[in-house]
Structures are given as structure tokens and as C-alpha cells.
Length: 351
Ligand SMILES: Cc1cc2nc3c(=O)[nH]c(=O)nc-3n(C[C@H](O)[C@H](O)[C@H](O)COP(=O)(O)O)c2cc1C
Image 1 (cartoon, rainbow, N blue to C red):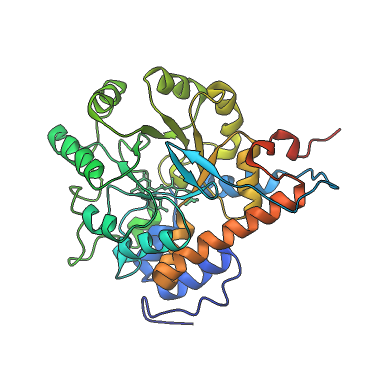
Image 2: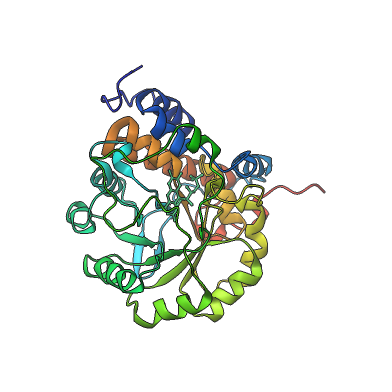
């Protein structure tokens, strides 16, 4: 195992996403690993995201013709070859020296849409220059509204296809592990669009969502919805999509697993807008389970950070390709050949 941060790792031994995390732990600095791997407080939500996915059992249907699969999905006018996106995560240069450029190249190699964080450590223009697949932009709304407007317009001008407004972080959570690891950005790394490490309070209300939609030219999604009432209000406010997310358990500990709140939100949304989900997706069967509970697509966060740390762009594409292949196997083995055929009947229920 490598002992120096970011010496190139051998990716051939990485068979699944848990292997990627293990290898990343050996190549990342302690501070960066703790930053990525940790959740808020007692990390109960982190654990529940995984446990709830694990506890869902599958109900396969055999003797179907599974010789051909169609995993394509169209989101906001772009056709994605499979329904897994790269979630926005901050500070990629602490994970790999090439930072977000490597992530964008890896996304390109894996034909994946990449949601760039407001806390990118690389300017948006540079990321857009190397991207060959759609980019979306994740927005943290800061107090200076003219800067917010400029940033949205910059994201639009470099070609970002959608805007994900993160609503679940008026303040960051109780981040004991990060604090213990004394997390801070090294001096040579900057996040050009954000002031501080996100530790100031961010005032964001439904009125601000109206304001953002009054000038945004690209579809607006809200990221961080955890209940049907907020999903309904989001739709009434006119948003184009919803991301069910608990920030990977990094903010408010003891909120439920996203897979547990998803069915109620899916019923409320009732296909009026695209519904995405993230939180604990590590296996192809997890993707299948999220789609069965009503998501149109999922996103992955931590595994991308770990893949990036292990092997830059190659590590990112490896993570996406493992998950995509596992998802295709899960579809084949449950007898579901299209995304629309993945409904709740693919989940096992006691008789
Ligand atoms: C290291 C790290 C940094 C993150 N930074 C952001 C961010 O800047 N903006 C944001 O909206 N979400 C951020 N998130 C949350 C992710 O977008 C996503 O909701 C979550 O990671 C998905 O769960 P998973 O990591 O279990 O796949 C971050 C998550 C991690 C792990």
C-alpha cells in the first residue's frame, strides 16, 4: 500500500466501492480522509443510509428476455446512458493534485454527468474546458446576493445544464471527526467562489428560491429535501427537479436514511418533476432499490472522492464503471430490462 499522499495507486485490485475506500484510506492524508469519510456527531444517519439499503430485499422475476437492457434516461434535455450522477463534493484538490479537472475527465471517460460543487478548488471555466459530458452546478447561497447572481450566470455561461441549490446547510453540522483531524484547507488550495469553509450562517428561504428562479436560465433543482411537504412546496415554487438527500449524514445526525423517506416523497411528487436521491449508494443493487422506490436517478459522493484519491480521473471512472456494471447485473438478475420496469414489485415483501 502507498504511504505517501496521492502516489499513483494500482487500480486493478479495486473490485467494488468498498475496496476503493480502503485503498483511499492508505493514500490520502489523514485530514483529507477524515473530511471525506466522516459524518455529523455520532454518525447514526451515515450508518442508517447503508443499513436501510442493506435491509431491503429483492424479488427477482425470471424467464424474462434479459438479453438487451435499456438504461438510458433523459434529464433536462440530455440523454444519460445510465441513471447515476456524480454528486457535488467540495475541495477535490485535497484528494488529488489535479482536483476537479481529474473528476471531470473521469466523468467524461465514464459518460457521467458531474455536479460541480460551489466549493470547487478549480475555476469553472477550466473544468468546462476538459468536460466532455454534461456539467451541473451546485449552489450554496451566500449572503452577498450579487455574488450569488454572478456565480449562477458564470455557471450558465460555461455551459452548466442545471443548477442544484443545496438547502440543507444553513450551517454545517456537528463535525466531531473533522474537528479532531483539525480540518482546514492547505494554504496553496483555494475555493474561488466561497468565503471561508462554509462555517458562516447562510440565510436561505423560499423567497430566495423564487428570486433565483426569476433569473436562472437553466433548470433549478432543490437538493436536500427530506419530506413530502417540502417536496410539494418545492413543486409549487416551480422547481424543475428534487434531490432527496441528507448530505450523506454530514449535517443533522439522526435524520432518517434517504431510502426510507424516498417512497413518501415519490408518492407526493407523483412524477411531476424528476426525482433524484443520494446517500449511501455503494452497490448496483442500491441503485435498483432507489429506482424501485421512485427515484429517476441517483448520485454518489464519497466513492467519487475516494476514487479520485486512488487514481485521479481513472479512479473516478473506475468507480462509475463498477457501479454501472453492477446496476446492469442487478437489472438482468431481477428481470427488469428498462428503467420504467423497475417499480416496487422488484422489492420483496413478506406474504
Ligand atoms: C467530502 C464531501 C463533500 C461534500 N460537499 C458538498 C458540497 O459542497 N455541496 C453539496 O451540496 N453537497 C456536498 N456533499 C454531499 C454530497 O453532494 C452528497 O449529498 C452525498 O455525499 C451523497 O452521499 P454519499 O456520499 O453517501 O454517496 C459532500 C459530501 C462529501 C462526502
